[in-house]
Length: 396
Image 1 (tube, one colour):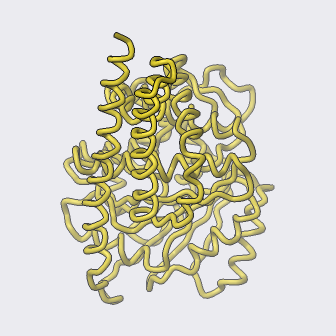
Image 2: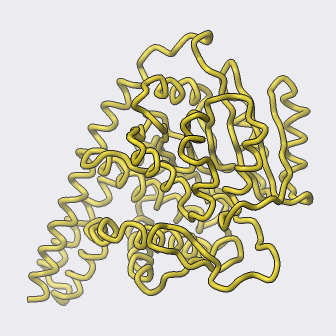
């Protein structure tokens, strides 16, 4: 009986993998059409202020920030912000101000807080220096194609559109932990987004890109409205939809340059994401059990005592999973090296499945050195009131 139940779940989970391939193909076809459209003339483009919250520095930080300074856009202001006067990112921003003196780059250093989310407080301090009506909020570890702003900003010309966001791929640097995190982004997160886009309207944005008009943002309450939310990007998209506007998933793909030193860090980051998702969208989180095809195929193999039938089902399910993962990462996200990393996907899948289960075992998350309790509406409060200001949370 157990084996039969597991076989049914394997069939459903494998069906999800095939469906994700179809959704990715539909998205890629639309993506190619959209990217082939003529770009708007410079004179018609509005001014843009890019807000980049920073905390600390890693070897890739200069290149990450330089990428933003060298975007091809006619009217561009970039505001970087840190909370601490001794943050090592300050020296990097000052170097950029020298190296790219023709770019309007500002640096804000302020520890003022408006809520539990340190990154949102940082962004609120930076917002005071914004010169343009169109805001683009992007994490400090994000890199984008040179024409990125030319692609996303014109979507705001449609008054129905409130926020523009986009997919991103993970780029691993140095450690196994980064490779595991990148594989999650490229073979789990990306496919889930393309599936969601086909079956429901977008109701959330991603921290990799949030493009919104200042007037729209202020009408929603600004950063103060999301200052206590852990998933501030998700909440902002939700607020836009509640206000009667659309969240648009743009065709451009950015990349996040990962900097995690250990699998323990990966587990903590994934658990924070999973637990927040479970608390805020319990139905959706429970339904996501069908995305864990490697787990169910492995359990079926064990339940059948490694029988020939069990091995055949396992091989078929795993083969389809790897095909879907490789095709979506390569053709939608542009991850060319995915094929040589596929051998890690089954191990990563089982690791992520354990995180999925662990998300049910508590209500707290750890972020920026502080333990928080996450409420059903996504707000977070310190589990224990800190005696001093907590360490500012890094991006993500």
